[in-house]
Length: 143
Image 1 (cartoon, rainbow, N blue to C red):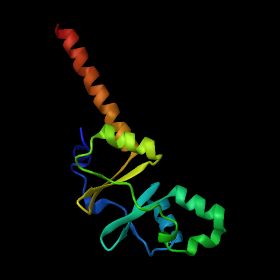
Image 2 (image 1 turned 90 degrees about the vertical axis):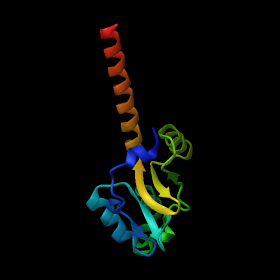
Image 3 (image 1 turned 180 degrees about the vertical axis):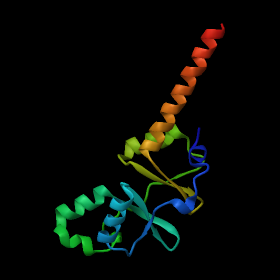
């Protein structure tokens, strides 16, 4: 299964994003309000980076509360590591593990069409294993 199958039916308009010029304070409030850990940072219609809880912590540890009034561009992780719709789930999991990240923007060319978390991928793998186990049980029962 690939990422395209995973995000099928999700509206790209539902992806929560911010811009490079928004303050970290505003984006932290957005993360808290939406109860999410990260979001894509957009600039001129393209993904410029990712802003996550980790970015907030690193900035606060380094510069204190004053960092919250700076633009997201100063704290985001850039460039963003991305995947496309054809990327296999296992490949995306391996990439996330190797790069020690938990979120991936999904691009169609240069256009953001999805945003997935490691939780999305793990759930997909669990669903696949459960489906295969059910098929095996059915096969054994009919054999």
